[in-house]
Structures are given as C-alpha cells and as structure tokens.
Image (cartoon, rainbow, N blue to C red; front, top):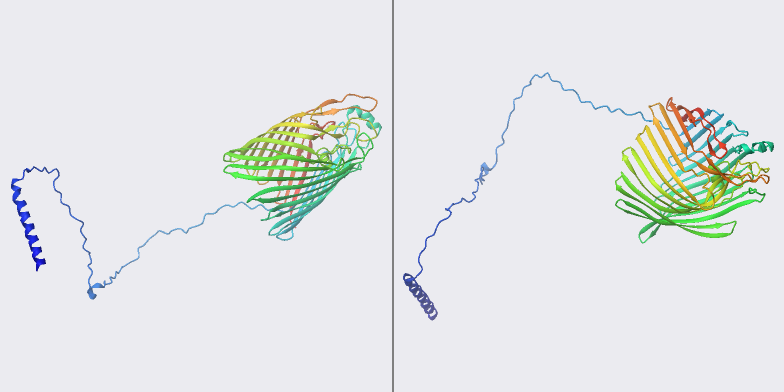
Length: 575
C-alpha cells in the first residue's frame, strides 16, 4: 500500500510543476515573428501499385485458361514468277605442274663442246630413297693464237641414300670426279723454248669421296656429319682429308649453349717442290669448338660466343692454340623495312690442294699448303625490303688474315718441267688486311620474274708481298630469270671483274731479270639462255656465253674461249 501511495504522490507533484510553468508563459519576454514562405508546398504522390489485369483467384473453375483455336482459310493465288535455281560460282584453277624425280640433259656447241647430265631419284618407301647423278662437260678447245692444246673435261659420278625415321634422319653419299686441263698459257716470249722442248701440258685431277650426316629430334645432340676425300693428279701428288662435325646443346643453369665441334685432318705429298726434286709434304689436324648463347629481346637478336681451335702440325711438330670472337647481332629498326646487323668473327681456315686446284686449275703440283689464321672478320650493314617484292642489302667489311693464300705466277726457269715456262701458278702467303663495301638489290616481281644485282669494292694491304696477287678490286654480278609464258623461258648472267695484279719473273740461270708486276685487265662476261617447253616432259634450250666476244684473261697468260653457242634438250621422266 505504501508503494502505491508513493507513485500517486509523484504523479500529483509532476502535474503541479507543469501547471506552474504554463501559468508563467504570459510573462515571457520572447516576441512572435513573421515566417516568409519561399517555396509553396508541392505535394507528391507516392508510387502506386498497378492492379493486375488478371487477378489471381482461388476458384478452381476460373483459374484455368480456356484454349482458343484459330482457323485460317487459305486459297491459291496465281503467280507467273519462277525463281532460278542457285548455282555455285566456278573458280578457274591452274593446271597443276607435273613434277618428275628424274631428268636427262644433252647439249652440244661450238669449240666441240659436249654437256650431258643424268639425275636419278627413286623412293623405296615413304621413309627411304636412293639417287645419284652422272655429269660430263668437255670442250676440244680451239682458242685463236695458242700453240698448245686448251681442251678440258670434267666428269662426275655420285650416288646417295636417305632415310627419315620418327626421331632422326640420315643420309650417306659417295662419288668420283675426274678433271683434265692444260698448262697452255705460255707467254709469247717463252713460246719458242717451250715448243723446242716439246712440253706436255696435260694435267689431270681425280678425287673420290664418301660422307654422311645425321640429324636428331628433341635431343641435346642436334646433328653430326663426316666427310672423307682422296684427291690426286697425274703428277704423283696425293692428298687425304677427313672432316667430322657435330652440334650439341649444352644445358647450363637452365640455359642452353649451342656448341659446334669440329675435327679436320689433312695430309698430302708432292713428288717435288718447284725448284728441286725434294719431296714436299703438308699435314696437320685442327680441333675446334664454338659455343654460342643466343639472346632474344623484342627486335634484338644477339649471339654471343667464342671459337677455340687447336692446331697440330705433323711436319713441324708444333702445337698452337687460337682464340676468336664469335659475336653477331641483328636489330629490326623498322619491321622488315630496315634491319641493322653486324658481327665480329674469326676462324682457322684449312687450306688444301683440292681447294686450290678447284679455284685455279692451272696450279703446279708443287704447292706449299698451310692454314690461314683469319684473326677477325668484322662487318656491319643494313638490309630490308623496299617493297613487297624488292629487297636490299648494304654492308661494309674489314678482314685481318694472317698467312692468307695468294695465287702468283711461277717464275720462269725453263727447266724440263712442263709447268716452268710461265704457264702455271704457285702459292705464296702473306698477312693481308681487306676493306670491302658491298651493295645488293633483289627483285622478285612474281614467280615468273626474278632479278638480282650485286656490286663489291675491295682494298687490300699486304705486309711482305708487293701486291695482293690476283685479287680483284671490283666485282659485279647480275642475274635474270624470266618465265615469258607457259612455254617460253629466258635468263641472263652478267659478270664484271676488275683489275688484278700478278708477277712476271724470268730466272733461267741465263737471263736474270728483276720480278715486276703485270696488270691483268678487267673483263666483262655476259651469258644468256632461251628455252621452250614442248610439253611437261621435254624442253629445248639454247645458250650463248661470253657474248662480248673477247678472249679476256681470267689468269695471266690464260685467255678464255670467245663467244660460245650451245643447244640441247632436257627430258624429264619417272620410273
């Protein structure tokens, strides 16, 4: 009861206080003010809910919609329009060219020239094939003003076998070659003595070779090859050479270093040297390794490497090590339009009797053969495309060769040797620095027309020799191939070689003269051919060589045949 009495007293007290404050409002000093309405009242209507068009009903009879059926009464309408049937467009396809695996060519021409070649290839299975070829080129000569025979001949025989398996492919081949030339380049001043001694100017070469190569897929050993050649002549000279190469990717810290290994062995003898009957020998072997790391980043491709070579001279019993730079780089300045490239490389070049005789068949069988130390070959250039069918290449080069091999006319001794009348060449070695610039343009308008032009300029500096013997200062070439239509085709090749310098030295123990330099004039050689395809198997052709009709001298005292004509036919076949 006390608890309720307390609550009642509190309520009465509160009401009394409120009544007192309300009574005192009459004496409040706050005055009333005027309220200005700036914006009229704009009532808004809240979003309304749209009443459903079809209210949901719980009535089972009205909840199910009635199915409405539509009936269309159609009747035919007469029409005179008849649409044409669709027809696929006809695409004219060029008749596929029939390709044959074998061919035979035979041609005859002036100077009693005979040219013949047979090439054969047969697929044993999808992975195996055998092939080979036989070729012969000869001329009975007849250059005006010569006192000795100038006929020549070259015959080659080759056979090969190839196999391609899942993880590797390999190839072996072997062949034989026979060549015959003459030391007919006797100068006019020595002609009487040469005829009086009835010299025999015939010089024949022969060679037999066997080799093979193998390539692997998805292995660290990429490829390998070997080659053996036996080369000799009818003067008692002989040379053996064996070359083995392999390319291996060596993994180092997650990177692969591409490395080339090479073993090059050579051994040869000559019955005598040029001035005495002492037997002349040469022989050595070279072991080389060239590791290279390739770095590619955006438009830059950089190959960083070195080349190391070990030389063992079997005659002098000397050993030597050689270290060369092997750095190349390319950078695309403007896509394929402008590409800069350059590099500095070097190598130990193995010279051989076979290589010398191939370049100059009028050498004497008394050569000094030794390697050339090319300390560096530095070059820089620009290449790219001027248009979609025209490309260019401009470059500069500087070479430093130690013991570079140079052909020089042998001194005239008038001995009983058939090549001692100024009609043969020997080898001399000197340190030669070469500066060269070159420019090249290739035009490939389409598959029917191709044109190429190249020009080179050289400047040489020698150390001991008076001149860089028989090295031209200017070289230029032009080639053209044109498929006129389906049947006719034509082509041309033009060569320009600038002046060369050689030595003339009479030392016959009777008349002794001081060696002096001969200037060999530059020459221009133009060749052209025209042919006609009778059908897809038989073609006929005609060729004209040395159209300028000048018996220029490629080597001192050795004029070439003037204008030559040759005609023949080619037959393609399968079997």
